[in-house]
Image (cartoon, rainbow, N blue to C red; front, side, top):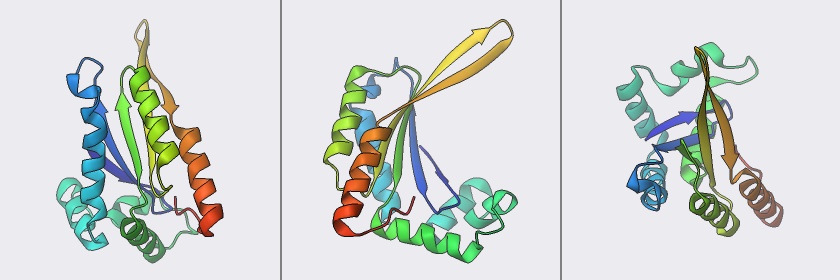
Amino acid sequence: MSSSFDTDGGITVIETKLHGNPDMRRTVIGQVFSYASGIALMSVEELDDLWRMRSGADIISSFRPALPDEVEESELRTRIAENLKTGRLRLVIAVDAMTDELKRTVTYINGHSGGTFELLALELQRMKDGDVEILVPTVYGEESAAHKAAATAAVSGRATLY
């Protein structure tokens, strides 16, 4: 499991599995939600401490070189704290080969969730041409997550924090 942040305070939890791993079938869904539930219970200070232990720097310092001028460090920290408080997370399952079951499950969960989280499946196919290797990404679940989030925000009058 790994996690990342964006300049809007969005929190992404990433679980990776190879196609041949038997956990790819159903266990991976439970794993990514287990990680998300642990992170969502943290305060921004606890998450910052964990980030510091793993990366050697606090979250904001990790962003400083790439932080746009219009984004204030205190505002970014506030956005991260709000996303933790509301459980607004982006969950990504990254695989080397997508299965129909995983696509179907991701679409189903997004279509029936309350719109506070976004679940995506990311297929990273490796292509090779001579000495050149590239990864070709394909994202699944993006449309159903965006549609559900927009519908939920319209009903409740909330703005998405991603």
